Amino acid sequence: MLNPDLNVFKFGGASIKDAAAIRNVANILEDYKNRQLVVVVSAMGKTTNALEIVAHAYFKGNLELANQRLTELRNATFTTVQELFGDTPAELATALNDLFVTVEWVFDDPPSDNYDYDYDQIVSLGELISSHIITAYLSHSGIASTWLDARDCIITDNTYREGWVHWPETLQRIIRHVPPVLEDGKLVVTQGFIGSTTENFTTTLGREGSDYSAAIFSFCLDAESMSIWKDVPGVLTADPRLFENVSKLERLSYKEAIEMTYYGASVIHPKTIKPLQNKSIPLHVRSFVHPGEAGTEISADAGDVYPPMVAIEKEQALVNISTRDFSFVAEHHIRELFDHITTTRLQVNMMQNTAISFNVVVNDIDDRIERFCALVEDDFKTTVDRDLELITIRHYTPEVTESMRRGKVTLLEGRLPLTIQMAVKEVAVIARKE
Ligand code: ASP
Ligand code: MG
Image (cartoon, rainbow, N blue to C red; front, side, top):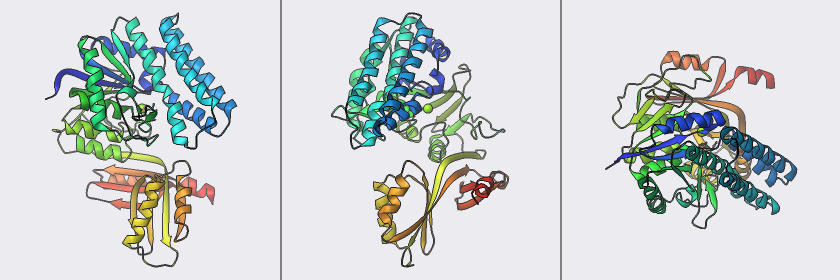
């Protein structure tokens, strides 16, 4: 049974990017202050990107750059606070200063040998900052709320930068920490994206993971619904930054939402849907610019006639792998290749094999492809084609497929009854390189 009074809201970076945006969020929450509400927030604006630069600079031993970027973030943070409050409330100033000090402490020690670990200790700062500011601002606006450390609730393994949630422990912790605050008549404000190992080391759940955090809270609390507040009116048939004729979907099934997000529709983090689906918790994707409008409802009982929907993933690479001895690519080769794909954490978005080659389209992240190629080098020859886009069209029609191909060369294509995928390169990119 779902809890009819309890809702979970997630506010992403764009919805809290500056003082004006945070005031808007407080206005939205004003209408819900007498309900039981858990508010999950991302880092403000592009903070996570800035912190990634800090983490990388520290790891590479460039403390000057790391310190400079951290100082810029600190200044921007206190400017926002100034704009919101005039005089910074003492408690908030202490909380924020303490956060920056913890990163300075990290800088005092040499980097560990695990970049992903260092990354999580530094990049998690963004959500800690934003959640402190928002909690303080809600209280300042007469909306009673309590700051909750998501690391006391969301417990993961130690796969840094991609923590796998330990559900039984997480469930127990959420049940212990959240309902008492809600029953006390306060909103709970907590961080998206971050968690903790059982040894109390901070982890993150993967970029854009705040949606997933909100789904974890929704699941564990049997929320009546979850809402993601965005700068678009709902789930659209394609990214409005890339296409003109996009339309909003009123309803979408969980299954369709899982398919689309898996293929890179960036509106929701792909891991978000499953926990909600398991308990039939509806997910609303709504506009923080027009909070009165309905948005898109994602639930079990949505119709199944859909218009064509397009998702595009950038920074893709096609890795062509062939046996050095021209033997056929057999099952045992594929098993060996996938062992290496798993250890180097290559994320495969499409694959196909021919008699003597195996082709995978993967996200081009850090030096993962180089590490993979080095591992298989003895037995396989690899060629890598970078700067590709992976276009996925669900419910494709010949017209939409043709229009997506225009000006592009298709390097690999896969077709299923409802889905077509094409790894493409812009003709202009090819011409420039030749
Ligand atoms: N702040 C994190 C990111 O930008 C998590 C999120 O926003 O969902 O990736
Ligand atoms: Mg986001």
